[in-house]
Image 1 (tube, rainbow, N blue to C red):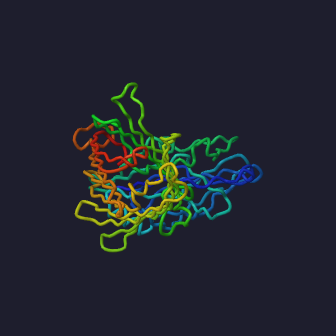
Image 2: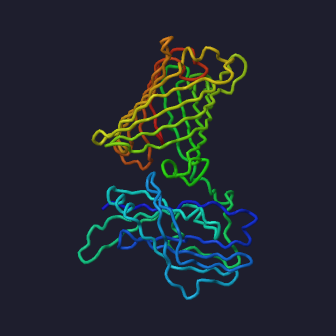
Image 3: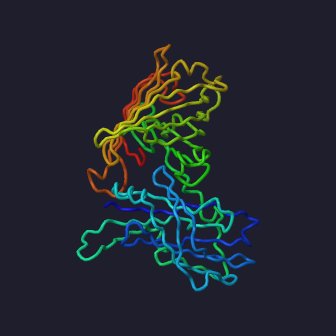
Length: 419
């Protein structure tokens, strides 16, 4: 049987005008049991300023398994007193029985990632979870001659939750985002993040950082069964071209690429076939003025299909983009970059991966192709650095905005932390 990773998701903070009076419930800690379908949960009641709070007999919850949302119920044991006096918190032991669909997902994989959130539709009481998600790994027993033994490994941020959360009677924890970075879990990697070097050119070094932010909903709660607005994202990519061979090693060009897009994660539509994609608006500029200024705005759509080929996943999809707005800085950019592209990728999650992107103007015959090859460094030598060996090749027009009308060939090698 595979391992189970159960994480707490953030619930929305209560309104400022409700905070002093509204009762709240806190999921304090989780623990596995010998029964793989049951998780023990401690629920804490935090009273409001003017009224005591009570731990209910049951709580509605949502389990997110991949892109599937499964309703579940947390049931609480009978308590001597479910209601507590003002300013005094109370705890109550509860259990979450994992639905059959969740247990089946856990059994079918080596590590099933499951997110737990309380029902957001409830107006009161207001639900809270720890400011950092608690991750609890339950591994399969190595030996079970007379009964199952469960090994528990908790992430560092959950160390306090293992022994329970200490609540001061005179204080109520704040759910303000600025204190606990409540929305940081909505931030994730977008494009590859790497640093690569290739000598002999005026842009020897190339560095890229890229991230996206889910604007609405619980982290990762996107796609089928989730609210439509949860698919809206903001993304930012910055690409730096570094002339390391010149005096003082200046950056030859820096491309800034903010965008807003709607994401539909891949959904299985057939035997081993998944379909997904995104549509968005991207702004590109290099932050320069005068003759060196470059900018372009594009609306794009990119469907992606993925199929399994043994241990490898093959993904591919066209990209169509349309220029909008002012192109006075580079009026002929379409001539060199075109309005069509193609994405193709083959790789293993823990092995070699090859990614290619291309763009082409069928009328002018101009365009470019770029390939990136990556491999986990720890597969070669145990460094503990969680890095990928990274190789990159580019041939064609417009490796960066400044040189959109120059044809170049580049070969670089380096490391990446996201591929």
